[in-house]
Length: 115
Length: 118
Image 1 (tube, rainbow over the protein chains, first blue to last red):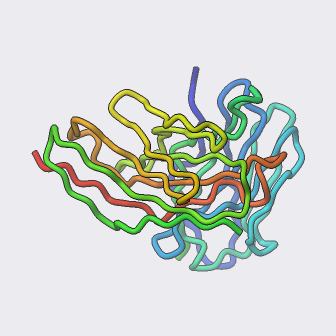
Image 2: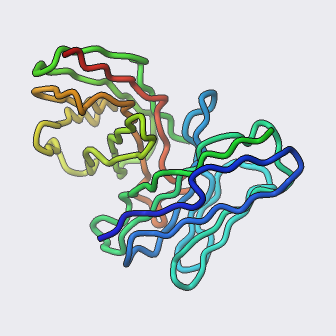
């Protein structure tokens, strides 16, 4: 079974621009979560989607948004980019199996550099 | 809110030896899950092992095992017969067992950088 895929893998933007990152979960997984990883703040939870609905949201400004499509693919968008948004953005998916639905499997990440 | 603390920023071990990475957490919940993830230089986060808080038995996965002490809120990872491929950042993580996984998704520690000496 293919793992979680994220596109693009690398991205360079300038301050004030917006960016959209994409994530395709493992086949059959319906829950997708996003995390931001920076050297200073570590790994921080952004949001989680399940069946096209945002289920949980971390403590990030409204510039960070996301959505999930009917095929479980998810996108996250960051508007009005700031230098501090430079980070590795990780996507993770979780299985439907109730005995494993809390377990998250991660993609390779998208490295965003804001200049 | 839950917190996860990894007090060892870096650990070093000789190849084939055993190493233990420490993790403590703080929560008021009684039902939750704990995980260890490995992040090699490729930055891909890989699940190493998973523990359900309501299970007293410590989880094991081949050379990896945990020592889960619920009362002490401690969750250490033991790697036996260390191999060069084990070199990576190791993150301890907590997730609530509440419906929907709680409000915070996975809560991670700051990580421990494991170095394997050949």
